[in-house]
Structures are given as C-alpha cells and as structure tokens.
Image (tube, rainbow, N blue to C red; front, side):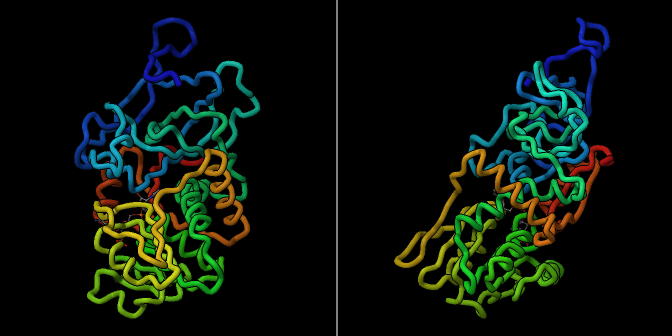
Length: 336
Ligand SMILES: NC(=O)c1ccc[n+]([C@@H]2O[C@H](COP(=O)([O-])OP(=O)(O)OC[C@H]3O[C@@H](n4cnc5c(N)ncnc54)[C@H](OP(=O)(O)O)[C@@H]3O)[C@@H](O)[C@H]2O)c1
C-alpha cells in the first residue's frame, strides 16, 4: 500500500492533491481523540485494490486500542493511525497489473489492522470477499469479523448436541452470533448479559435461558451444569462463569472487554482454551461460512446501531458505556 504519499488526481506529478475523509487518532486516549480529517488519497500497490468504503466495522477491541490499552502491546499502531480493520464498499481502483474485472464489485474485507474508518481504504486482493447481492451490506459486514470469530470458536470448542453452552456478553457482536450457532449445533444455550434490556434480547435470539449477570447470585441456577463457556468478558464475570463448568468442561477465553483477563487455570477435567491458531485461509473460510449460514436463514446478524464516519468518537463512547447491542457500524456513505 502506498500511504500517505500524496498524489495528484491525474496520475502525473504535482498540482491537485486528492484527499479523502478519515477518522484518525494522533494520540491514545478517550473517545474524543478520534477526529475526522482530510488525508491523502491512498493508492493501491501491486496485488491491492482501493475500495470506496460504504461501511466500516467497529469491534470492541478497537476501543481498547484507541485508549492505548490493547490486550497485547503489538496491537497498538504507530501514530497517527486510522483505526478500523473491516470495511465494505465498491472496488474503485486496482493496483498495477491488477484484475480490472474487480472494478465496481461490492466487496468486504479485513485490512492489515488499521485504515478502515475512512472513505477510501487499501486492501489485498487475496482477502476480498464478494458480497452476495441477496445479502444486505450491513448484515454482511456485521458477519465479517464477528461471524468468523464465532464460527472459529465453535470449531475450537467442538460443541456437541445436548451440551450446555454459556455465552457471555450474549447480546453483543460475537455473543449474539454464538448464541445462534450453539443453538444450531443442538446445544442448550444460556446467554448471559448485563441488564434487563439485554437479557430480553438474548431471549429473542433463541437462548434457552437468559441471565443478567449484573444481578447478585446470577449464576446459582446453572452451577455445575455447563459444558462450554465462551468468555469474551474476562474479569470477575469470566471467573464466575468458569466456576459453573462441570467435569469435561471447556472454557474458551477470547477477549477481555471488562479490561481484565480472568484468573482461571485448567484443573483435572476442565480445559482452558486460549487464542485460536488459524491460517489466513481458514479465517476467510470461517467468514464465508458465516455468510452462507446467513443466506440460508440460519444466522441472523443483529446490527444494533450505526453512526456516521464523523461520529466515530460518539460510537466509541457508546460502546464503552455498554449501551449498544449486536454490531456497531460506521456509515461512511450510503450503500448503493
Ligand atoms: N469481534 C471480533 O471479531 C473479536 C475477535 C477476537 C476477540 N474478540 C473479543 O470478543 C469480545 C467481544 O467482542 P465484540 O466486538 O463482539 O464486543 P461486544 O460483545 O459487542 O461488546 C463488548 C461487551 O462486553 C461487555 N462488557 C463487560 N464488561 C465491560 C466493560 N467493563 N466495559 C465495556 N463492555 C463490557 C458488554 O456487554 P454486557 O453489557 O452485556 O456485559 C459489552 O457490550 C471482546 O473481548 C473482543 O476483544 C472479538
């Protein structure tokens, strides 16, 4: 990718510099550090395309990256940085020698960690996923990161029919999909979330039992009855959920939205699964599987709220306040 090299609009030397809109950070900090500015138009290199971004995905971890408190130090980008790793839009330009049949196609893709909150993004051709015309672009993008994560977690946990699965943050992006996938796998699903509004949503998603973990003793009814825990929250909620597992149980730890890792260790008969070692091809296949399930009507992504690109700071503040449900997207330009 060639960025932030400034180039002129006619492919010659200087004169008019093309610029695009982006929401970026110059320092780590609270949501207000996200500012919308004009930045130089990026140009695709060999094996790359430029995408006119219509929608940008926000994942929870991006709020932690923005704050400078990512789960791993190597997740923090060099500054200034345009946050955002997942986008959907139309291919506007192909890199030198690239396949021109891609031009104008509706695609979605992950970037290399940054560059998504922008009206133009550069992506590797290899990572492009063509969006089926039958699927609304918002719902498709809601499945890109969260869908593949949920699919890969289901593979990792090897959930069996008749098992009992507890999903934390079950009204959230990944959680709302795990509830549905675990149901599809024939499991009995307990969805746990914060507050009555989210508890009701978890019930609507098809959970057999919906629990509000902000209430005291929330876990008492299911103690010792859980085979698999999907822990994206960590901290004391993850630790409480760990305590619910029975012999043979699997604790799948994949995030720390509480800001703390859970202090849990494998014991005889209970395993702790951390991180997923997947190849880029497996990761893409998992996203495609999520799209396929959505097309078959077996997975229904919940797009809970959208914000304009200029409102990225508001979107991050909302996510930190725990009010959003399902997926949060930035609408950069109306999908067309
Ligand atoms: N999205 C992905 O593809 C992906 C990939 C790998 C790992 N993960 C991890 O998976 C987890 C879920 O990711 P997501 O993007 O789907 O987010 P999300 O679940 O939509 O949002 C995070 C949820 O965590 C809960 N939470 C608990 N304590 C919190 C706190 N102190 N502050 C804020 N939220 C708190 C909130 O739900 P309640 O109010 O119901 O508690 C909140 O809605 C994250 O830990 C993330 O890092 C996600």
